Image (cartoon, rainbow, N blue to C red; front, side):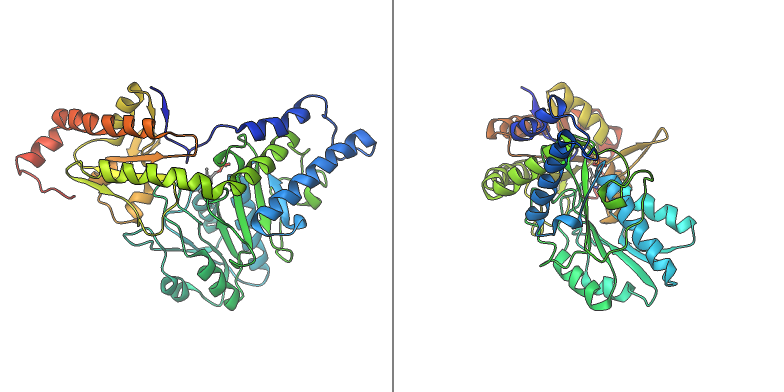
Length: 395
Ligand SMILES: *Cc1c(COP(=O)(O)O)cnc(C)c1O
């Protein structure tokens, strides 16, 4: 059995998205910047896609900019707000410790350029506290950027309240909504969001296309210089096929959101319930504020990488928090940010379920993971010491 349980990493392209993009890969290949009718036909497709995306998040079409993905949208939003802030002498940026690297590494770069960055604690439950944000805000704060939902542990942040606080203080608020778009309702007006990033391939559009929403009066600076596409804010001939597919996939996901989540949540909850029975395991992140599809757990005494390799042999695609950087295995910054000790963070597993998964697949995972964990523990010197009481159990 083959089970794809890594939908937070990427998703398959839906039939709807594929059908929408096909004409742009074949007969409808005009350049939307060309003045003749054949080019203008493409331009119509582009603007229809922009309108569709805007409607899905209650924005205006002119507030939607197409990018190469979530990373580019994050970069442009953050760098723009930082530059605009610096012009007014504001060089302080607020974010959280468990953002995606597209955000964290952009902030690091700005730090080297003289900006000051405050990363808020996300506490043990993986949820930012408003009072922490309020305490961090300063006269010279140029931007608050806090993700809508975390990609590893699936916790949802109080975006609307964060937005309201930022608005009250006159500070631009950006949210990386890559894990939320198409999966959770988003209303940029009601939620007081000034800028928002999304990525097509996390909701069944192809890879390499994303969206930056920027409220009308938000200053945007180019990351990519060149032609006047995207109202001069993002140069480069538009990825027409990707853009129309993104719009079709987002609309499909938003139209079917309730039905999809009604299918996904019972699968996720079964995973939590059954895998939670494994001794010395731990579920990561608040279950109260949680995206529908993501399950993140730690199993003591094993390495996440070994677990993934064994699951791969059993046909299960999953992910671990650990990122392999420069040959050394560092535990996930997300799991460390919620206070897990290194040893525990190393034994992590992320399963992310989508609407195309079935309960049979979930049952296969439930039958397989406990066996593999037991097998690895039997081989683990660390587990041996834990069992003999030579070192204390941490979970
Ligand atoms: C996947 C992801 C990104 C990056 O998006 P790309 O389109 O792959 O560049 C950014 N933020 C979060 C939270 C993500 O999950």
